[in-house]
Image 1 (cartoon, rainbow, N blue to C red):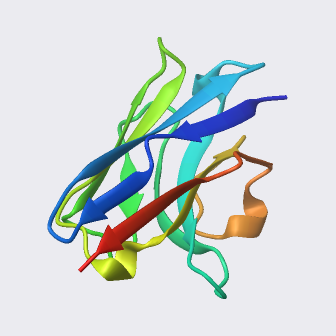
Image 2 (image 1 turned 180 degrees about the vertical axis):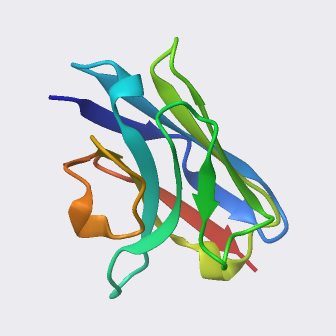
Image 3 (image 1 turned 45 degrees about the vertical axis):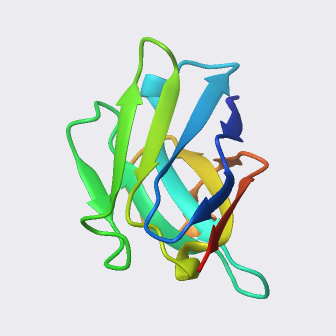
Length: 123
């Protein structure tokens, strides 16, 4: 089974940018759709976006569309989440997750999860 590790989180001012990375081990990443979710304090997991196995297709939540970009490098077994124009409402723990079959915005359909990385956006 695949293991996922997120990195790249931190503190950034509103309007700034961050790039998160999701690194996979234990299996090849091209076997999985990769989704990004976030969880703010006291809230449930929120879909951010996902990328198809080939990387050709991406899907985003309305809240981040036009600001966030997901890309993948299957040769390096990594997926990136580029986040621009960040605002305090983007503050959350960000998780990457793997789905062995198809794109989905439903967290419970993803089989494997990383431990998350904290993103804090100050106003």
